Every structure is written in C-alpha cells, then in structure tokens.
Length: 221
Image (tube, rainbow, N blue to C red; front, side, top):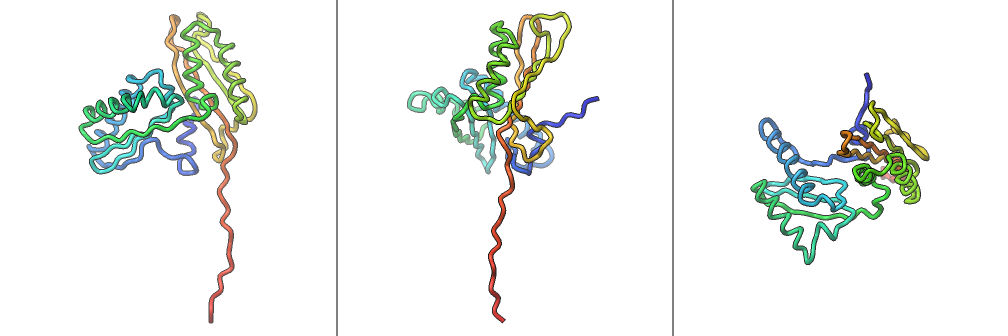
C-alpha cells in the first residue's frame, strides 16, 4: 500500500497556511465545512473559464471573506465590477450572510500547478496527445523560472485498453523536503475513454527561516 501525504498538508505550519481560516465546534463545524464546499463549487460553476487556481475562505462574525486567486481577474471582476457584484449577491443568497469578495491576480499562470493541470486536462478533452501536452507544459513552466516541475497522468491514455501511468519531470522536485516551496495541483479530464487524472508538482525554491540578529543588551547594575 502506498503512503502518500498531500503536499500542502505536509507543509502546514512550516510556511503554508490553511485555505480556510476559521474555527467552530460540534454541529456548527460540520455546517460551516459543508458551506465552504458549496461556496467553492458555486464559484467554479459560475466562472469555469476564469483561470481560478485557489479560493481562500476566512470567516468573521456575520461575514465571510472569499479571496479568489485567478489568472484572469478581468473575467471575475467584469465591466465596472458587474460580475463580482453579481457573484457577491449569489454567494450572499447561498449563505445568508454578508460576503466580501477579493480578487488577487496570478502573475505567472505558467508556474501555477493547478492552472497547469487544468490546461493539460483541457488539451486531453480536445483529443491532443497526452505526451505532447505534458512536454509543452513542462517547457513553459521552466521558461517561467521555476526550479523543477513534475507531471503525472493516469488512466486510459490514448484510448488504451488497460489504464497506465506516465510521468515527465525536469529540474529538481524534492517532494519530501518540508522547506521546499512546493505547489501542487490536480485535475481530471472527462474523455470518451473515461477519466484521466493529472497531477502536477512545481518546485519554486527553498523557504528558509529568517535569522534574527542578536543585539547586545546593556543592563545597569
């Protein structure tokens, strides 16, 4: 049996933070957790082509703050903010609470693991060869300045009778190093042969703890 750990959960409290930041107990925890799933599903359903990589949710008394990380902020915001106002109204109707929506732009979409995975699945659904899509994604990611990238695809690749896995990598991808700035993404392609899963790891360097400079303190006697 494999013993796999999620790359984000593996690095929590070292330098990564939770995508949902709130606290609850008992029955309220289950209710808010289901609400988080509904919020994310609603946003992805309303804006499937907005290039959304991550959705962070933070809760305050009678208010929910949603931060959308997207490669196409113009689609999310809309003309004169029309799209984001409509989105805020629908999320408020869904939760029954005051919702604040913030949009953050992803400056390098070719170096974002989730966007790379969704790009490959889109090409697979358009019947582009999986090896060609993987090689092109690796090349674009390395051009964006990352230190390493690894892509794995699994399923009935090219319509094969038996499912298999294929992987391609370039540069260093230290998946077991906690201080490694590792970005992870997963997406599924719905093809005529069945589902094909795509996993992407992007290594952007090491995050070292900052050293505090010691200063001499004078104590009078």
